[in-house]
Length: 254
Image (cartoon, rainbow, N blue to C red):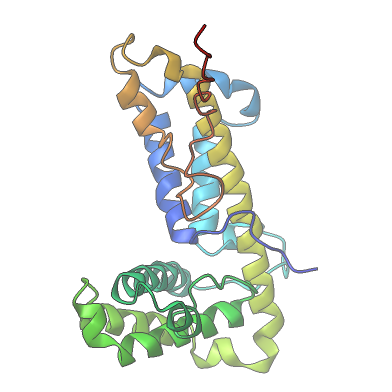
């Protein structure tokens, strides 16, 4: 059974958000109250150190997940960086296309692959990126009006080329590519869960009920992306999992 993501936004957003969580954890002011709640999860290593290792595992294509010989085929660092950059660019291209063609759902889906995130094997991800690249080349003028320029298209083309070299497209490497993607997906799922755990600890350490009463509370919550992560296009409702205020019930006049 293929490994699927437990979140539906780009890995590049997960990595950048995780780095912001790590920065908050290591902040001498806003970090200790949250780390104290994660102490039991850090029996073998400090939680922030283990979390940093998780980020590296995802950022480098999952190759750091295991040292067992033959468990996965490894991407070179250049290829791993190209994969992350390709995901960032395809996501940005889709977002720009949504601005350029706000009412053309057929084009957004068929040409820019809007909303299509499965399957997650290496070849499928790469093929979707090629389709997005072709769409960017076809609709260059429309995208340019919304900030996506020729240099962005060229960079996307270069990242795809880096991942389409002879060594990666040989028949003998197909199993390795599938394994790379599955391993990276598992690493990304674990990182996403850790981000949720950190955010939950931050909500408990910095409760919304104390807003306006405790100095610096709003800034601390912002450092942990409360109500911002996960993004609204991803899981849940943009990280805002605190219950909404109850709807007032009208009281009949006597």
